[in-house]
Image (cartoon, rainbow, N blue to C red):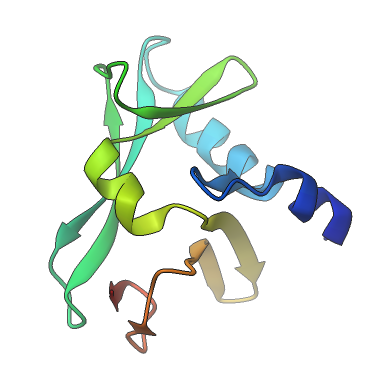
Length: 119
């Protein structure tokens, strides 16, 4: 990945979403209705205290962080954004390990499976 591209897309008050992650989410949205968005958030759960979640949603408002790409949207609610601002969201396809990965500067520790974290 081009480092200058990462720096150019870095947002300390938002999140950066790599092209690989956008392409992954775009595949998920291709079979859904046009008005659906991908909602990314965090909730209390997992072995480390918080976990990331993804879901299709038809509703978002002005308080949500909105990332537009290829005519689609990824939205993050304000509460979740406070926990993940400054993060890079990427899609990794490394043999049997594939999926969305967060590089979250706010996480103090991440569990072994990478699904949950502590602040």
